Image (cartoon, rainbow, N blue to C red; front, side, top):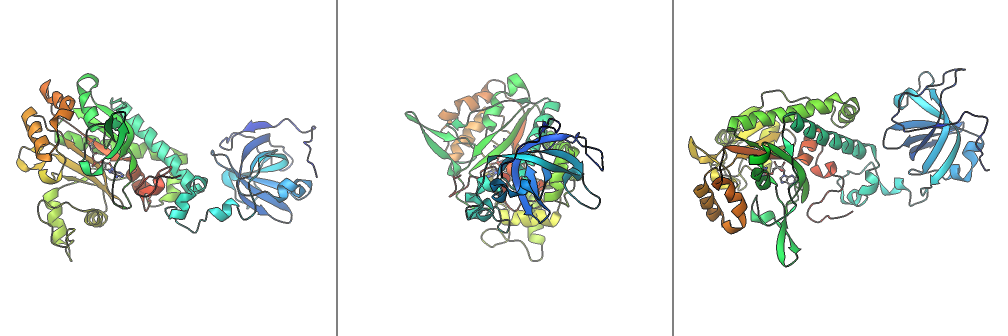
Length: 461
Ligand code: 4AD
């Protein structure tokens, strides 16, 4: 059977599935005749008709091919998930009692196959299984096909919306966006997680954070931010560590520590508001995380020393990594941090970490020189999503800090110069976009929040 378009029908209007302003036929009233291009997402062949759920990246559309010539072509008999099609037909209101996206369906009168997809053992349905977790290695190998699924694609739409929201909020708060380099010759967060790369006759590293560069432009641009990739050669395979991640970083000039905390709370809450104000995105979020609630303000503020006391006061106490009670100076490891965050079950600003366990550039608390003016923002289900601090202001103090860390100050002359040519009280933070997404979209691991995750042992597809 060879299909032919009926030339007596009205000319079809080409639309994307997202378009909602289409006249729907109902009873004797004719709906608009449209042409929709997309791929078969689901296929159900029944005696009286074949039902196709078509996707095009803008929505889902139920399409009906009534049994007859339309369903008897070779193309129709070999339709499969992924088949790329142009479908022509009348858009109709759904019959009473039926359900389909947007309450409508396309009554197909003609189609063209633009790209077939295998319906044999190589079919997409045999390569991707909804029974398997998206973070299973086999599914990560098929990530390019997994991304065609509803969960993965709505998460990517949410991700784009979140990134847009950050840009909007920073714009509203008058921070200027800059784009620091990814290839650098300085460390920010310790030498242990640096990736090095041959760079002509020198060695370069992939940046761990753009913070130091952001600090250099405060004098001319005022408050600044960037959304760039950061890289960490993490030798651990935790649920929340990636080798390459998207880092939302901001730096604010002439502030005090409490200003930094207030700003951070404001940014996080405004971003959530913007995301939830978008009905489509809010719908995706509702599917992925039905119980998500806007965080209540103000966020809890807890000092590191109080967190240590809290961990020890639990019954049974939550031990440190060596299995002993926590003491001042201990890192609060991921497991303990998660337990605390989940028990408290609201956003926490954990502040004033000891100097010894924090980065060289952090400012000491004038009221207690053992600790820094630092903050981690902890969210239920994920733990730390933000790390920030006030920055050391003094020239000599900074040189001393390099020495203590075994850093060669020569490579940092440009950073040190900020203290030489008019230093200022300033601070900033970095937020892991993937962790933020894992929090709001209730993901077991940050790996499913990336287009193509990179972590130890995985650099493909
Ligand atoms: O706490 P971190 O290491 O802080 C910095 O890099 C600062 N220089 C940022 C700044 O002040 N401008 O990292 C900040 C955030 C973490 O809270 C976490 O959300 C994320 O970056 N992050 C990671 N996300 C995924 N995988 C990893 N390996 C990450 N390491 C840090």
